[in-house]
Amino acid sequence: SSTPTTTPARAWLALAVLMLPVLLIAIDNTVLAFALPLIAEDFRPSATTQLWIVDAYSLVLAALLVPMGALGDRVGRRRLLLIGATGFAAVSAAAAFAPTAGALVGARALLGVFGAMLMPATLSLIRNIFTDDSARRLAIAIWASCFTAGAALGPITGGALLEHFHWGAVFLVAVPILLPLLLLAPRLVPESRDPNPGPLDPISIALALLAMAPSVWAIKSVAHEGFTGIALAAFRLGVVATTLFVWRQNRSETPMLEMRLFRYAPFSSSVLANFLSVVGLIGLLFFLAQHLQLVLGLPPLMAGLVTLPGAVCSVIGGLAVVRLAQRYAPHSLIVIGLLLVAAGFALVLLFRNDLTVAAVIASLVTLEIGVGISQTVSNDTIVAAVPPAKAGAAAAVSETAYELGAVIGTATLGTVLTASYRSNIELPHGLSEPAAAQAGESIGGATAVANEVPPEMAARLLDSARTAFDSGIAPMAGIAIALTLIAVAVVIRAFRGRPTVGP
Image (cartoon, rainbow, N blue to C red; front, side):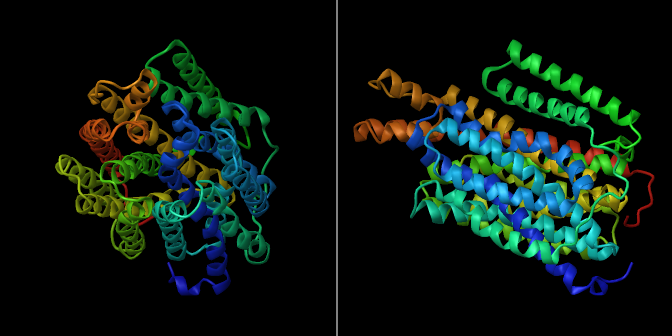
């Protein structure tokens, strides 16, 4: 295919505008991990409520991505993008001044609704703006890089704001980012939709919600309370709804999601590679945000800056792989990316007894280069597998994998950490019952209690809490390595016997 220079300058300006919501959603995914210790101090929520503050957003987002992708294909992707941006900015401003932990959870859930309008729209608009193969691949590399850059800017932005302002400031970031989008998108971004969309299918939308929301909730619930009756019932509901959703899509002449795509092995294995690499990355960031601040004692801004080299390397990896994709088979590049992700976790495992700032940087740099490479190639494989008219639905699948990975990464790997902490913490004698309960639940709780007890007791409590928290590193990294290697095996198998030239 021809070189990117044949793509008009206007297309690249449109891409720049479309990067704003991507950057924002990625910042939103990680900024909160750094604000959580301050929110916990303010509201004193239970560990479960704390996880809900983080996860309500991605739970709703994940449940709505496929319906919103299909809706964008029908009503117009740019129109949906602008509605999403307006709502997201308004609700972010409200979240900044939430009076209670419950109100904050509600605001985060509503942000998920508008976030789901933003994400598939950006990737599907790119698919339609860039018709040339190599220009599209570069545009998707920039898109994926913005995700990574945002994920890294989250901690730094959060850290800088939290040192000077109330925690609500991390939500207000959305307003200045989205205003230029609302002003420029109507002029620069062309509207696109499916020319033959068929009617909107409310039953499919309801089934998509029932497939995602209860399943994700069940995973979170099992993570905290174990296998309860209600968690198993929610999981069964998710499975039944998924089965009915698939059956309905296969029967429909104009399905919301083209199920035949999943029979195309490169498509489905790329979705899985996306999903598993994000599970690891978000799980690790969730852990490191707390390790850097609460174990190593860094202020929020310094902790954020520690994650910067990794993010820069991820952007470099994502852009460099565009050139390589012209010479090497896509699956070889996805496999190399995933092996680097596994190597990043192996370094965390290696340094687990002395996880210094240098060790954190080394493991993040290795892992993030891998994420940059694998995400760029897998996203390109996903959107190139469909005709441009169906780009919204395909993009939504890619996004759902990403968001589901974020939810499951926080829920499962976060739970491994919590369980390890609870079984290893040794509380000093003399703590009151409420203080002991708070300190025994999480390292954030122990840090809050340490501020209220005599210095000698505080020192003993913090030593024990830090050791207990870091005891979760080995099982967490071990699980992440296993998941990544499963993805490697699936990708190798899926592409076996296919032409080895790029798509």
